[in-house]
Structure formats: C-alpha cells, structure tokens
Image 1: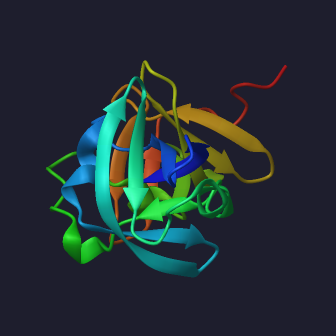
Image 2: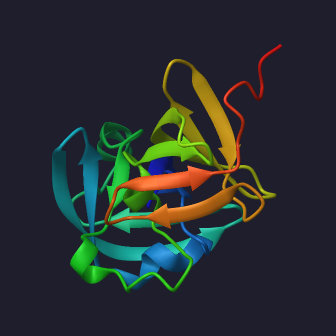
Amino acid sequence: MGRISAPYAIRGWVKIKTQTEYIDSLLDYPVWHVGGNGRWRPYRLVEGKVHGQYLLAHLEGVDDRDAAEAVMGMEIAVPREDRPEAEDGEYYWDDLIGLDVVNGEDVALGRVTGLLETGAHDVMVVKGERERLIPFVDAYIREVNLAARRIVVEWGRDWGLD
C-alpha cells in the first residue's frame, strides 16, 4: 500500500509514497506491516499526516533518524482482513499481481509483475517473452477474473514493437 522513501527530520518520522487512492488512506489502519520479500514486521502507527504528495508517519519503535533509515525502502502492507472489500470493478493491486494476461485471441502475453501510477491512469507491467506496459483502463481491459487468475485485454501481440 506504500513504500518508505526516506527518513523525515530527526525524531524517527518517515516519508511514504503511498499506492492508495487517497494519500491519507493508510492513516485509517492502526497497525502497518513493514518489510518485503516475505519478511514483515508489524508497527503501530503513532501519528501521521499528509505533506504534499507524501504521507509522513511516526511508527512505534522508530524513534530516531537511524531507526528511520533502517526501514527506508521497505514496503508497507495492511493485512487483507483489515481492508474493506474492493468495490465492483475495482481491484487491489496485490490482487492483480501474478495474474496471467491474454489478449482477445487467447494469446498469452505474460503475467502481471507490477503496476505503475502515472497520474493519468494506472499501467500494468506484464512480463512474458518481453515486457509490456498496458494501461489499466476500460479501453484495453476486457475482463478481470480473479478466480481464474486471468486478465483478458484488447492488446495485439506485436503492439509496442518497433
């Protein structure tokens, strides 16, 4: 749901680039899981606030700049059971990562390895025989089937080739 991008000041605050619809959405959760690569540690949120395009937070146990530097670059997650259900036609990014992507002719294009927020719209990073960047907008997304772990797109196999 975000990434700790830098320490902020000297009292353990951290600067966070969120991956949520609203910058302050993470403040709704009293406990965050910080880490990555299957290694996570819970941290209680002491205080947080919006600062421009970033979120600033003070996490329990992160009380000085050295501790803040130690968590820099780590991902922030919230357990699924603590999150509200996604609305119809909306998806959490972690639900999309790992799904197979095929086009309308059932040609496999690869697997979703990540998503990018571009400002205009989100973009799926799809890796197969090569990497493709596919806008996650209605014009290109025909169907998302979480149960089948598959996304059908309107995207030609050779689109984006020189």
